[in-house]
Image (cartoon, rainbow, N blue to C red; front, side, top):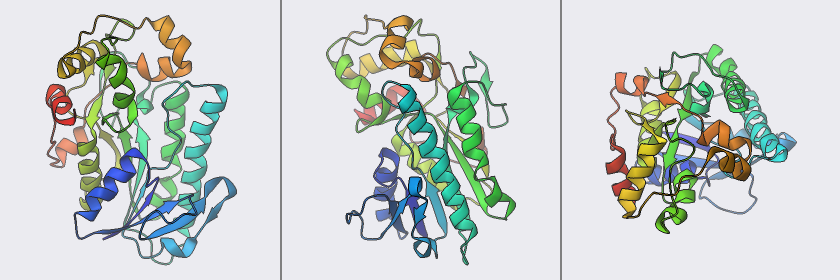
Length: 296
């Protein structure tokens, strides 16, 4: 299969490309860069509405991962970039695919567990209702932009991705330095649930969604068994052999990260990967301690 990937230089995109290169599949990287980054690549500029339409032909699958990183302080400008990068690019992908003579069999689009909002300790599956807040509202709009492709008969999968664990990027990379220095600790009261997944399982799950024709609609890309932030902190400290006695109070988290603190760090989202389990996906890591040991 030939797979078109947007966001090919990101944490997930680059890891997906590494996996594809080990297989008999091929890929095309759809990138804003005009430099030659990949053996097979095409150019687009979502903000300008520009895309090399012919380059989208003859792909069995499209994996749409492009979007502004959510890490860092959420200023009004940052929130606007987060929102626009996802909605504009997804609208362009949908419009472009609809014009193709040979359409892909499946379109796999990134979304996030932020869809569910702050939901306490209630267990959430793909059938759960959306929550409230900036990111929850964004995820609803984000996923809806691919709906016309589904109505046109293309199999569409919405990846509701949790906290991705990798030493090369994302939340874990940001946490490593303070924890290694013995400055890590729980965030807020530590009782909020974090739904995590190792990067290796993100890639495995994406491949599962591409190849398994019964998988469609929203799919929770998280490991079985969410943990509280307090448990996450203890496991990370244990993996690094460092104490975790310096908590970050809620007010301090808000001062440092802005609205991101409430939307991501202090928000409780206890998500289960029901659809992955029901369709036979085998996780490499189901225990946080094993995942951290393997990653670090």
